[in-house]
Image (cartoon, rainbow, N blue to C red):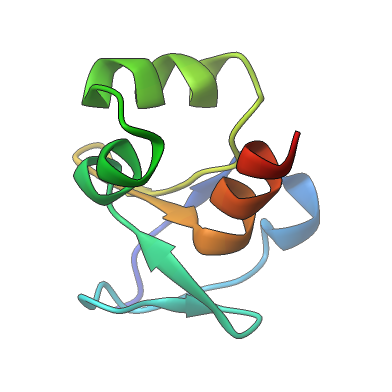
Length: 79
């Protein structure tokens, strides 16, 4: 059974992926919130705020499972 996902980017809303450690979306690695926090040198709560504000794209696989495309992190760092 495939998990229902909620994507902050509506273009990718129809994509379905199994919950794996190294999920891929369009060839981009999907990172966990703690992994993104390490890359951005911030806390997990700050990552959540960036997602809520729309500055960081996220995919919610379940209420407790959120992944962030690596390309979204790179785009944020380039600004």
